[in-house]
Image (cartoon, rainbow, N blue to C red; front, side, top):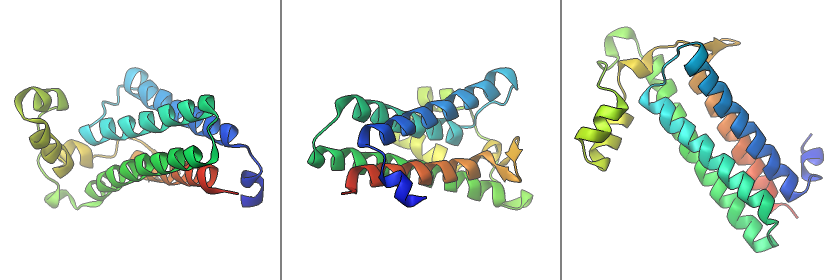
Amino acid sequence: MTQHILNFRFRTLLSIVFLVSISLLVYGYWLEIFEQLDPCPLCIFQRISFLALAVTGLVGSLHNPSVPVCRVYGCLGAIFSLIGTLIAARHLWLQSLPPDQVPECGPGLEYLIEMLSFTDMLKKVFTGSGECATVDWSFLYLSMPAWSVIWFVFLGAVFLIAGFRR
C-alpha cells in the first residue's frame, strides 16, 4: 500500500488531501443543516483545521513547487494536521469522561467571541463544556471526534509523504 502511495505525484497527493478535506467539511455542514446537529466550539475548530488542510492542499497542488518548497508544504500540512488531531483528541477525551465529571455547558462560541478577548475565548473553548461531551453521531461505534483524529492523522501522513519522499 505504501509503495503505491509513494508512486503518486506531489500534485496528485495534495489534490487528494484537498478533495478529502472538502468532502469531510461538506458532510459536516450537511449534518448541521439537514440533520440539525449543531457543532460545539471544538467541532468548529476542527472544521477550521480541515479547511486549513484543504487550502494548503489546493494551493500546493496548483503551485507545483520545487523540492524544497514541497517540504514546506509537507511541514505546513503536518502542522495543521497535528493541531486538528490535538483538538479532536481533546474533544474525544471530554466525551470519554463519566457524566459526573463532564464540565457544565457554557455559552455558545459567538457569545464568547463577542464578550471575551481572543486568548480568553480560546482558553474557555479548549477547557470544553458539556455540549462537547455529548455524542450525537457515531459510525462503526466511533464518534465524530474519533473519526476526525483518524482523518487528521491520515491527511498529515499524506502531506509528509508528499513533501519528503524521494
